[in-house]
Image (cartoon, rainbow, N blue to C red):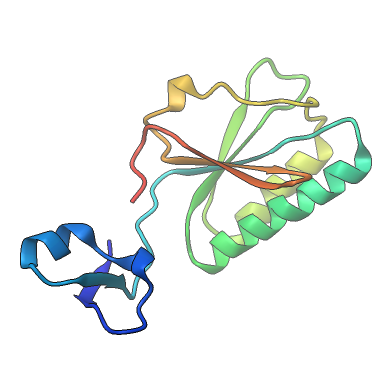
Length: 145
């Protein structure tokens, strides 16, 4: 959700709230709060290259750290190579994150593992995948404000 106010000279056009603008016949912009994000899923793409994996983990950790600082709960998905399915861990605090990160680092995660999330499509609004090239964002069928 956003707070809105009337447009002021110098406001960025990308923040225009078109629905309110059309309803009120004056230009309104979104301000103040962050959009509501529900059910964010985060994962990492592991490769056979240790240097690429270090970079991917840096991106992964930075993203998780940023969301925790903004008090955004999220889920982490990964697969232990000895399991025949993935696991999802809910993250809502730093201690919880550290426990899951320890599990991720101690398990053997399959290389080049991308997740088929069709079964989870409406439970999650967004999937972030950390790679050696940065963070990939995929919008899913669930609510994403």
